[in-house]
Image (cartoon, one colour):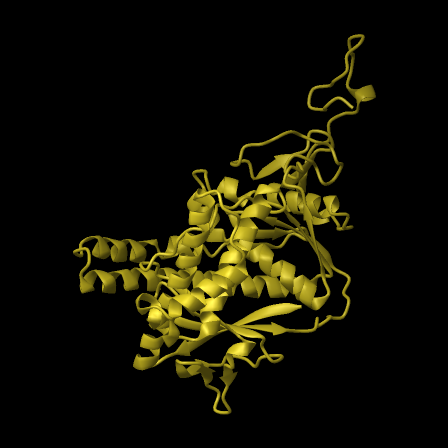
Length: 404
Protein backbone atom coordinates (compact mmCIF):
# COMPACT_ATOMS: atom_id res chain seq x y z
CA UNK A 1 0.00 0.00 0.00
CA UNK A 2 1.07 3.58 -0.65
CA UNK A 3 1.34 6.11 2.15
CA UNK A 4 2.45 9.71 2.42
CA UNK A 5 5.09 10.87 4.87
CA UNK A 6 5.26 14.62 5.41
CA UNK A 7 8.21 16.53 6.88
CA UNK A 8 8.90 20.19 7.53
CA UNK A 9 11.57 21.73 5.29
CA UNK A 10 13.47 24.98 5.77
CA UNK A 11 14.64 26.55 2.47
CA UNK A 12 17.01 29.51 2.65
CA UNK A 13 16.49 32.83 0.86
CA UNK A 14 17.65 31.84 -2.65
CA UNK A 15 15.86 28.51 -2.37
CA UNK A 16 12.60 30.24 -1.40
CA UNK A 17 12.96 32.44 -4.49
CA UNK A 18 13.57 29.37 -6.66
CA UNK A 19 10.54 27.64 -5.17
CA UNK A 20 8.39 30.72 -5.78
CA UNK A 21 9.54 30.67 -9.42
CA UNK A 22 8.67 26.98 -9.70
CA UNK A 23 5.23 27.53 -8.13
CA UNK A 24 4.53 30.29 -10.63
CA UNK A 25 5.71 28.31 -13.67
CA UNK A 26 3.61 25.30 -12.63
CA UNK A 27 0.57 27.56 -12.26
CA UNK A 28 1.12 29.12 -15.73
CA UNK A 29 1.54 25.70 -17.37
CA UNK A 30 -1.70 24.51 -15.77
CA UNK A 31 -3.63 27.63 -16.80
CA UNK A 32 -2.30 27.59 -20.37
CA UNK A 33 -3.35 23.95 -20.82
CA UNK A 34 -6.78 24.60 -19.30
CA UNK A 35 -7.26 27.65 -21.54
CA UNK A 36 -6.36 25.61 -24.62
CA UNK A 37 -8.93 22.93 -23.80
CA UNK A 38 -11.63 25.47 -22.93
CA UNK A 39 -10.98 27.36 -26.18
CA UNK A 40 -11.27 24.11 -28.15
CA UNK A 41 -14.51 23.22 -26.37
CA UNK A 42 -16.03 26.65 -27.08
CA UNK A 43 -15.10 26.28 -30.75
CA UNK A 44 -16.67 22.81 -30.94
CA UNK A 45 -13.33 21.09 -31.51
CA UNK A 46 -12.34 17.67 -30.08
CA UNK A 47 -10.89 17.34 -26.60
CA UNK A 48 -7.14 18.07 -26.71
CA UNK A 49 -5.16 15.02 -25.47
CA UNK A 50 -2.33 15.25 -22.99
CA UNK A 51 0.33 14.52 -25.61
CA UNK A 52 -0.70 17.54 -27.64
CA UNK A 53 -0.66 19.76 -24.55
CA UNK A 54 2.85 18.56 -23.77
CA UNK A 55 3.98 19.50 -27.29
CA UNK A 56 2.42 22.94 -26.93
CA UNK A 57 4.23 23.43 -23.60
CA UNK A 58 7.57 22.52 -25.17
CA UNK A 59 6.92 24.92 -28.04
CA UNK A 60 6.00 27.71 -25.60
CA UNK A 61 9.43 27.46 -23.95
CA UNK A 62 11.02 28.50 -27.25
CA UNK A 63 8.99 31.71 -27.50
CA UNK A 64 10.12 35.00 -25.95
CA UNK A 65 6.87 35.31 -23.97
CA UNK A 66 7.31 31.93 -22.20
CA UNK A 67 11.10 31.48 -22.29
CA UNK A 68 11.27 31.73 -18.49
CA UNK A 69 9.46 28.38 -18.23
CA UNK A 70 12.84 26.78 -18.94
CA UNK A 71 14.23 28.11 -15.65
CA UNK A 72 12.51 25.35 -13.65
CA UNK A 73 12.57 21.56 -13.89
CA UNK A 74 10.58 20.23 -16.85
CA UNK A 75 9.12 17.52 -14.59
CA UNK A 76 7.34 20.17 -12.51
CA UNK A 77 5.59 21.50 -15.63
CA UNK A 78 4.66 18.03 -16.87
CA UNK A 79 3.20 17.16 -13.49
CA UNK A 80 0.96 20.24 -13.74
CA UNK A 81 -0.48 18.75 -16.93
CA UNK A 82 -1.03 15.47 -15.08
CA UNK A 83 -2.88 17.39 -12.36
CA UNK A 84 -5.14 18.93 -15.01
CA UNK A 85 -5.90 15.47 -16.41
CA UNK A 86 -6.81 14.29 -12.91
CA UNK A 87 -9.12 17.27 -12.42
CA UNK A 88 -10.93 16.51 -15.69
CA UNK A 89 -11.14 12.81 -14.86
CA UNK A 90 -12.69 13.52 -11.48
CA UNK A 91 -15.17 15.93 -13.08
CA UNK A 92 -16.28 13.41 -15.73
CA UNK A 93 -16.46 10.57 -13.19
CA UNK A 94 -18.72 12.73 -11.05
CA UNK A 95 -21.06 13.29 -14.02
CA UNK A 96 -21.18 9.50 -14.58
CA UNK A 97 -21.99 8.84 -10.92
CA UNK A 98 -18.71 7.02 -10.32
CA UNK A 99 -17.74 9.44 -7.51
CA UNK A 100 -19.22 12.47 -5.72
CA UNK A 101 -19.92 15.32 -8.09
CA UNK A 102 -17.19 17.88 -8.55
CA UNK A 103 -17.02 21.09 -10.52
CA UNK A 104 -14.97 21.49 -13.71
CA UNK A 105 -11.29 22.49 -13.46
CA UNK A 106 -10.72 26.16 -12.64
CA UNK A 107 -7.85 28.52 -13.35
CA UNK A 108 -5.28 28.86 -10.58
CA UNK A 109 -4.72 32.30 -9.12
CA UNK A 110 -1.38 33.83 -8.25
CA UNK A 111 -3.02 35.03 -5.03
CA UNK A 112 -3.63 31.48 -3.78
CA UNK A 113 -1.93 31.16 -0.40
CA UNK A 114 -1.25 27.43 -0.83
CA UNK A 115 1.18 26.33 -3.55
CA UNK A 116 2.57 22.91 -4.48
CA UNK A 117 4.90 21.31 -7.02
CA UNK A 118 5.70 17.63 -7.52
CA UNK A 119 8.92 15.87 -8.51
CA UNK A 120 8.84 12.29 -9.74
CA UNK A 121 11.77 9.87 -9.94
CA UNK A 122 12.84 10.99 -13.43
CA UNK A 123 13.48 14.49 -12.04
CA UNK A 124 16.59 13.03 -10.35
CA UNK A 125 15.87 14.47 -6.95
CA UNK A 126 17.53 12.69 -4.05
CA UNK A 127 18.16 12.65 -0.31
CA UNK A 128 21.79 13.53 0.32
CA UNK A 129 24.02 11.61 2.78
CA UNK A 130 23.76 14.62 5.08
CA UNK A 131 19.97 14.34 5.19
CA UNK A 132 19.12 17.26 2.90
CA UNK A 133 16.58 17.10 0.08
CA UNK A 134 18.31 17.84 -3.22
CA UNK A 135 15.86 19.30 -5.77
CA UNK A 136 16.77 20.14 -9.39
CA UNK A 137 17.32 23.86 -10.04
CA UNK A 138 16.53 24.61 -6.38
CA UNK A 139 19.37 23.10 -4.35
CA UNK A 140 19.82 21.11 -1.15
CA UNK A 141 16.98 21.98 1.20
CA UNK A 142 17.26 21.27 4.92
CA UNK A 143 14.68 18.77 6.21
CA UNK A 144 13.59 18.12 9.78
CA UNK A 145 13.30 14.33 9.87
CA UNK A 146 10.87 13.20 12.56
CA UNK A 147 11.04 9.52 11.54
CA UNK A 148 12.72 7.30 9.00
CA UNK A 149 11.15 6.52 5.64
CA UNK A 150 10.18 2.82 5.42
CA UNK A 151 11.27 2.54 1.76
CA UNK A 152 12.60 4.54 -1.15
CA UNK A 153 9.98 7.17 -2.06
CA UNK A 154 8.66 7.33 -5.61
CA UNK A 155 7.86 11.06 -5.64
CA UNK A 156 8.05 14.15 -3.47
CA UNK A 157 5.67 17.10 -3.35
CA UNK A 158 6.92 20.42 -1.98
CA UNK A 159 4.10 22.41 -0.39
CA UNK A 160 3.90 25.95 0.88
CA UNK A 161 0.86 26.41 3.12
CA UNK A 162 -1.11 29.54 3.97
CA UNK A 163 1.05 30.18 7.04
CA UNK A 164 4.21 30.34 4.92
CA UNK A 165 5.54 26.97 6.08
CA UNK A 166 7.20 24.53 3.67
CA UNK A 167 6.66 20.77 3.70
CA UNK A 168 8.02 17.82 1.71
CA UNK A 169 5.48 15.04 1.22
CA UNK A 170 6.94 11.68 0.12
CA UNK A 171 4.95 8.85 -1.45
CA UNK A 172 6.34 5.49 -0.29
CA UNK A 173 5.32 1.89 -0.84
CA UNK A 174 4.89 0.03 2.45
CA UNK A 175 3.91 -3.48 3.46
CA UNK A 176 1.05 -3.98 5.92
CA UNK A 177 2.18 -4.34 9.53
CA UNK A 178 -0.31 -6.95 10.72
CA UNK A 179 -0.89 -6.67 14.46
CA UNK A 180 -1.64 -9.76 16.57
CA UNK A 181 -5.32 -10.59 16.58
CA UNK A 182 -7.30 -9.42 19.58
CA UNK A 183 -10.78 -10.18 20.87
CA UNK A 184 -12.42 -6.78 21.49
CA UNK A 185 -14.68 -5.23 18.86
CA UNK A 186 -16.41 -1.91 19.28
CA UNK A 187 -19.02 0.40 17.86
CA UNK A 188 -18.20 4.08 17.61
CA UNK A 189 -20.74 6.89 17.85
CA UNK A 190 -19.24 10.23 16.81
CA UNK A 191 -20.80 13.33 18.30
CA UNK A 192 -20.35 16.91 19.45
CA UNK A 193 -20.86 16.71 23.21
CA UNK A 194 -18.33 13.89 23.29
CA UNK A 195 -16.05 13.39 20.31
CA UNK A 196 -16.64 9.62 20.37
CA UNK A 197 -18.59 7.19 22.52
CA UNK A 198 -17.67 3.50 22.48
CA UNK A 199 -20.04 0.59 22.83
CA UNK A 200 -18.26 -0.50 26.02
CA UNK A 201 -19.33 2.74 27.72
CA UNK A 202 -16.13 4.76 27.35
CA UNK A 203 -16.50 8.38 26.30
CA UNK A 204 -13.78 10.45 24.63
CA UNK A 205 -14.16 14.15 25.34
CA UNK A 206 -14.17 16.62 22.46
CA UNK A 207 -11.18 18.99 22.81
CA UNK A 208 -12.95 21.70 20.73
CA UNK A 209 -9.70 23.23 19.52
CA UNK A 210 -11.38 25.90 17.40
CA UNK A 211 -13.72 26.99 20.18
CA UNK A 212 -10.82 27.33 22.60
CA UNK A 213 -8.84 29.47 20.14
CA UNK A 214 -11.75 31.67 19.06
CA UNK A 215 -10.77 34.66 21.17
CA UNK A 216 -7.22 34.75 19.83
CA UNK A 217 -8.45 34.19 16.28
CA UNK A 218 -10.97 37.00 16.65
CA UNK A 219 -8.30 39.48 17.73
CA UNK A 220 -6.00 38.46 14.88
CA UNK A 221 -8.82 38.76 12.34
CA UNK A 222 -9.80 42.19 13.66
CA UNK A 223 -6.19 43.35 13.35
CA UNK A 224 -6.15 42.08 9.76
CA UNK A 225 -9.33 43.95 8.86
CA UNK A 226 -7.80 47.24 10.01
CA UNK A 227 -4.78 46.99 7.70
CA UNK A 228 -4.78 48.73 4.32
CA UNK A 229 -5.30 46.38 1.40
CA UNK A 230 -2.13 45.68 -0.53
CA UNK A 231 0.17 46.83 2.28
CA UNK A 232 2.98 44.79 3.80
CA UNK A 233 1.38 45.14 7.24
CA UNK A 234 -1.76 43.48 5.91
CA UNK A 235 0.32 40.58 4.58
CA UNK A 236 1.97 40.21 7.99
CA UNK A 237 -1.44 40.23 9.68
CA UNK A 238 -2.72 37.62 7.21
CA UNK A 239 0.24 35.38 8.05
CA UNK A 240 -0.58 35.74 11.74
CA UNK A 241 -4.18 34.67 11.17
CA UNK A 242 -3.01 31.72 9.04
CA UNK A 243 -0.51 30.62 11.70
CA UNK A 244 -3.22 30.64 14.37
CA UNK A 245 -5.48 28.52 12.18
CA UNK A 246 -2.55 26.19 11.41
CA UNK A 247 -1.97 25.63 15.14
CA UNK A 248 -5.62 24.65 15.56
CA UNK A 249 -5.47 22.28 12.58
CA UNK A 250 -2.20 20.71 13.79
CA UNK A 251 -3.60 20.13 17.29
CA UNK A 252 -6.76 18.56 15.86
CA UNK A 253 -4.74 16.30 13.55
CA UNK A 254 -2.52 15.14 16.41
CA UNK A 255 -5.60 14.36 18.51
CA UNK A 256 -7.11 12.35 15.65
CA UNK A 257 -3.88 10.37 15.25
CA UNK A 258 -3.69 9.52 18.95
CA UNK A 259 -7.32 8.40 19.21
CA UNK A 260 -7.38 6.46 15.93
CA UNK A 261 -4.12 4.64 16.69
CA UNK A 262 -5.36 3.67 20.14
CA UNK A 263 -8.65 2.31 18.77
CA UNK A 264 -6.93 0.33 16.01
CA UNK A 265 -4.46 -1.26 18.41
CA UNK A 266 -7.12 -2.18 20.99
CA UNK A 267 -9.87 -3.57 18.73
CA UNK A 268 -10.01 -6.20 16.02
CA UNK A 269 -13.03 -4.57 14.35
CA UNK A 270 -14.53 -1.09 14.56
CA UNK A 271 -17.97 -0.04 13.34
CA UNK A 272 -18.76 3.60 12.53
CA UNK A 273 -21.71 5.43 11.05
CA UNK A 274 -21.46 6.94 7.57
CA UNK A 275 -22.36 10.49 8.59
CA UNK A 276 -23.60 13.12 6.12
CA UNK A 277 -20.94 15.64 7.13
CA UNK A 278 -21.61 17.96 4.18
CA UNK A 279 -25.27 18.18 5.15
CA UNK A 280 -24.52 18.78 8.82
CA UNK A 281 -22.02 21.49 7.83
CA UNK A 282 -24.91 23.49 6.36
CA UNK A 283 -26.82 23.66 9.64
CA UNK A 284 -26.47 25.86 12.70
CA UNK A 285 -24.02 23.27 14.07
CA UNK A 286 -21.58 23.92 11.19
CA UNK A 287 -18.77 25.38 13.28
CA UNK A 288 -18.89 22.53 15.81
CA UNK A 289 -19.05 19.92 13.03
CA UNK A 290 -15.96 21.35 11.33
CA UNK A 291 -14.21 21.63 14.69
CA UNK A 292 -14.77 17.90 15.34
CA UNK A 293 -13.28 16.83 11.98
CA UNK A 294 -15.17 13.55 11.67
CA UNK A 295 -14.26 12.92 8.02
CA UNK A 296 -10.52 13.26 8.62
CA UNK A 297 -10.79 10.97 11.65
CA UNK A 298 -12.66 8.24 9.77
CA UNK A 299 -10.13 8.49 6.92
CA UNK A 300 -7.35 7.84 9.43
CA UNK A 301 -9.23 4.83 10.76
CA UNK A 302 -9.59 3.48 7.21
CA UNK A 303 -5.93 3.54 6.23
CA UNK A 304 -4.70 2.44 9.65
CA UNK A 305 -7.12 -0.50 9.60
CA UNK A 306 -5.75 -1.52 6.20
CA UNK A 307 -2.17 -1.07 7.38
CA UNK A 308 -2.48 -3.03 10.63
CA UNK A 309 -4.88 -5.77 9.52
CA UNK A 310 -7.99 -4.56 11.34
CA UNK A 311 -11.58 -4.35 10.10
CA UNK A 312 -13.43 -1.06 9.72
CA UNK A 313 -17.15 -1.38 8.96
CA UNK A 314 -19.39 1.51 7.93
CA UNK A 315 -23.14 1.31 8.41
CA UNK A 316 -25.74 3.37 6.57
CA UNK A 317 -26.49 6.85 7.81
CA UNK A 318 -30.22 6.09 7.94
CA UNK A 319 -29.94 3.36 10.56
CA UNK A 320 -32.15 4.40 13.54
CA UNK A 321 -29.35 3.93 16.07
CA UNK A 322 -30.77 6.53 18.49
CA UNK A 323 -34.34 5.21 18.27
CA UNK A 324 -33.84 1.50 19.02
CA UNK A 325 -33.35 0.05 22.49
CA UNK A 326 -30.12 -1.94 22.46
CA UNK A 327 -31.48 -4.12 25.29
CA UNK A 328 -34.73 -5.40 23.76
CA UNK A 329 -34.58 -4.11 20.16
CA UNK A 330 -37.85 -2.15 20.26
CA UNK A 331 -37.92 1.04 18.16
CA UNK A 332 -39.05 3.89 20.40
CA UNK A 333 -39.14 6.70 17.84
CA UNK A 334 -37.03 9.83 17.29
CA UNK A 335 -36.02 12.04 20.19
CA UNK A 336 -34.85 15.67 20.39
CA UNK A 337 -31.14 16.30 20.89
CA UNK A 338 -31.62 17.61 24.43
CA UNK A 339 -32.70 14.14 25.62
CA UNK A 340 -29.46 12.39 26.59
CA UNK A 341 -30.97 9.65 28.80
CA UNK A 342 -34.24 7.90 28.03
CA UNK A 343 -36.30 4.97 29.25
CA UNK A 344 -37.40 2.22 26.92
CA UNK A 345 -41.21 1.97 27.11
CA UNK A 346 -41.07 -1.74 26.32
CA UNK A 347 -38.53 -3.16 28.79
CA UNK A 348 -38.16 -0.25 31.23
CA UNK A 349 -34.38 0.03 30.95
CA UNK A 350 -32.86 3.49 31.25
CA UNK A 351 -30.38 4.10 28.42
CA UNK A 352 -27.62 6.58 27.74
CA UNK A 353 -28.41 7.95 24.29
CA UNK A 354 -24.80 7.92 22.99
CA UNK A 355 -23.75 4.56 24.45
CA UNK A 356 -26.98 3.01 23.21
CA UNK A 357 -26.29 4.36 19.70
CA UNK A 358 -22.74 2.97 19.78
CA UNK A 359 -24.06 -0.48 20.70
CA UNK A 360 -26.65 -0.31 17.89
CA UNK A 361 -23.94 0.73 15.41
CA UNK A 362 -21.91 -2.34 16.34
CA UNK A 363 -24.99 -4.56 16.11
CA UNK A 364 -25.92 -3.17 12.68
CA UNK A 365 -22.38 -3.92 11.51
CA UNK A 366 -22.70 -7.54 12.63
CA UNK A 367 -20.38 -7.22 15.62
CA UNK A 368 -21.29 -9.07 18.79
CA UNK A 369 -20.86 -6.55 21.61
CA UNK A 370 -22.26 -6.54 25.07
CA UNK A 371 -25.00 -4.00 25.74
CA UNK A 372 -24.61 -4.20 29.50
CA UNK A 373 -22.90 -0.79 29.65
CA UNK A 374 -25.63 0.83 27.56
CA UNK A 375 -28.14 0.98 30.41
CA UNK A 376 -28.05 3.65 33.09
CA UNK A 377 -30.34 2.12 35.67
CA UNK A 378 -33.24 -0.29 35.93
CA UNK A 379 -36.62 1.40 36.01
CA UNK A 380 -40.05 0.05 36.80
CA UNK A 381 -41.12 -2.52 34.20
CA UNK A 382 -44.62 -1.96 32.73
CA UNK A 383 -47.08 -4.79 33.19
CA UNK A 384 -47.53 -7.27 30.37
CA UNK A 385 -50.69 -7.23 28.31
CA UNK A 386 -52.33 -10.06 30.18
CA UNK A 387 -51.60 -8.31 33.50
CA UNK A 388 -52.61 -4.77 32.52
CA UNK A 389 -56.20 -5.01 33.74
CA UNK A 390 -59.42 -4.90 31.77
CA UNK A 391 -59.15 -4.24 28.00
CA UNK A 392 -61.77 -3.27 25.49
CA UNK A 393 -62.38 -5.77 22.75
CA UNK A 394 -60.13 -5.14 19.73
CA UNK A 395 -57.62 -3.01 21.67
CA UNK A 396 -54.14 -3.37 20.11
CA UNK A 397 -51.98 -1.18 22.36
CA UNK A 398 -51.44 -0.65 26.03
CA UNK A 399 -50.34 2.71 27.42
CA UNK A 400 -46.56 2.89 27.42
CA UNK A 401 -46.10 -0.24 25.30
CA UNK A 402 -46.00 -0.03 21.46
CA UNK A 403 -48.11 -2.46 19.52
CA UNK A 404 -46.31 -5.65 18.56
